[in-house]
Image (cartoon, rainbow, N blue to C red; front, top):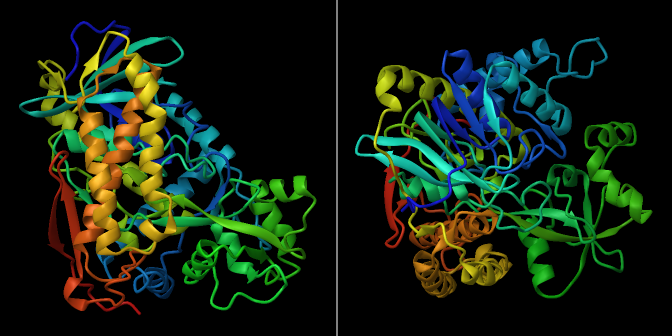
Length: 535
C-alpha cells in the first residue's frame, strides 16, 4: 500500500531491476545486461562490500567435468540433505559454476597458481571477488543504486513491474519501473551479527510473498555456525580440523563441525563451555589455511591465541537461511517464481535443489549464487524482451502488507528494536530452533502470530527507520514460515531435528511449500527421482 503522497526522489525505467548487490545480484545484473537488457541494481548497502561473501573467502563447488568427479560431487551431500536434492539441478549448477569461474579468470580475477602453475579455481577471496563484480556490473552499463533498500514491490494485474524504496544517504525515495524484477536479497540471519550477515533480514522473502510467491524448505533454516565466543567470525568449514574439549582438556565425545554440532549445543545449553582447537590440521597445511581465510585468524591474532595449538571457547551463532537451504520457491530453469515478472536468485531462493535439507556451506552457496544469478538474469531479460514497451508502461501499485506513509511515525521508531528482540527470542535459542518439538513450535508460533498482527497494522514511514521496521516484519514473517514448515514435517531430516519425531520417515520424502502472510499455508511437493541413486 504505497502512500501516493510520499516524497519523490528519483524514478527510473528499466527492462530488469535487480534487488540485491551480492554475488547473485551482480551475476544477474551482468547476465541480463549482456542479454541486451537495460538494468538497474538496487542494494541496501554498497554493492561490492555488503553481504555474507564480501568480508571473507569462500570455497566454490567447482568440479571438472569428468564423470567420476561429478558423480562424487553430487553424492557428497545427497544423503546428508535427506535425498531432497535433484540431479538435473546439480548438473546445471555444476556446469554453470565451472563456466562462470573460468569466465572470472578471463575477467582478471587473481586465482592463485597450483604446483603445476595452473590457476586454482576452487575458492574466491570475497573482497577481491566482489570488487571485481562491481567493476563488471558498471562496465556492463548497469545503473547502481547504493544504500537503497527496497520497501515494496510494484505490480498490476499482469504481474510484478518494479519496486520502490528509500535512499538512506540522500534521504529521499526511489522508484524503478521494470518489466522484470530479480530478488537477490540474500537469506535471513535475524541480525545475529554473524560475519557479513547483518544486512540479511529476509526482505526479499516478504516482498515476494506479498506478490503471491511461495517459499520452499523453510524448515531447513536452523543453521548455527561455530565461532569463538570473542568474535563474530563464522567460518565453520575450518572446524573440520578441530577437536572439541571441556575446560579440563577432556574430549567432548561426539562433537564435530558437521554431524556433531548438536552435541556442542547440548553442552552449551546445559551451561558447560565447549572449547575448540584446530589440532587436526596438518602442519604443512596451516600456512595455506591462513592465506585462504585471512579474516578467520584476525580475532585469534588480536587475542594472542594460536588456534592450532591452544584451546579457545566457542559458541553457536544462528545463520538461519543464509546457511540453511530454505528460500523463495522457483518453478523453472529460469529461476522464475510463478509470479509473472518475478525471479529469485542466490540465498533468497531455495537451495534445496542442490543441497536438499542440509547446509551446503560456503561452497554450494557460492556456486548457487553465480549460477542462479545467471539463470535469473537470462530469464528476466528474455521476459522483458517478450513484453517490449508494455513492460514499463503500466499503472503500478505498491504491494506492501503494512501501511507505508509519508508522515513521520515515531511509534515505529520506538517499537522496532523491541520487535526485533521479540523475533530473536524465538529463533536464537537452541531448545526452540535446533531441538524442535510440537509444543515448543506451537508456543513460538502463538507469540510470532501476535507479533505479526501488530507489525501488520503499524504504519511505516518512507525513511531509513521505515526500512528497519520492514526488516523486523520480514524477520517475523520468515520465522513464521520456518516454524509452520517445521511443525508440518513430523520427522527428523537433514538439519531439521524433531525431538518428538527423532527418526527419518521415508514416507515424508517431499518438499514443503509455504505461502501466505496472515494465514500461512503448507503443501507437500514430490521430489524428482535421480537417474541413478547417488551414494
